[in-house]
Image (cartoon, rainbow, N blue to C red; front, top):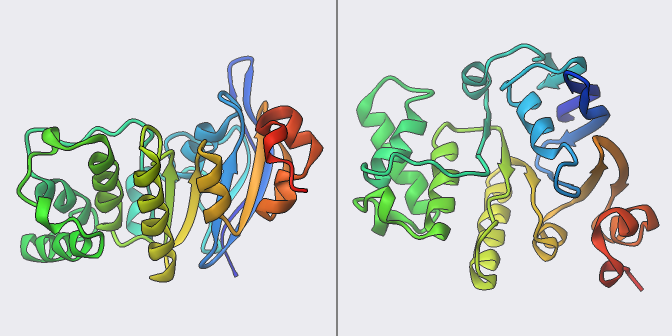
Length: 241
């Protein structure tokens, strides 16, 4: 069953068409990757799905319910959470406080929010930083905190927007393991990423967009050998022999 389905989604900003007739579907328990050059419309697609702004045309369904004009906080309560490309934690507050903020999206009880936040931190091997001020974290740990805060909302599907940008290779490998672990817990993942070895290792399927249009969809190997994708984005080093 598709947990998320997008039909002919288009988003215009005045005379600029950022997303052009995008179709996609994600089955429960899948990891779907979304790639494309800078400016291809990836984050705009995420923003439409997550309720930041409505699509100009087309339909978006979450768990069978049309959500075109749902607000982000409403979608979060329904089980659709996302991270942001630019991480902005409450810098003067602790890691635990930041994760509890996510939990409060779906509970009004402080004790439950704190317990849920601690469970998330433990699951991500992050509990040793619970009292650390978010502003003192490394880039890698800020990315981890961003995911933890989203997880505390108890999502059914998690949209990850370039959570590996700026990480060192060893940190990328650790983040890949974390994301696969989330899928093993039953969370469906939709991820934008520019680090190709990461997105290829993570994804069950990959969609490629260019100038707002989908130009390819398939398994990582199939996408990596697609001439249109190679010309538009990947480069010859990603050709599958």
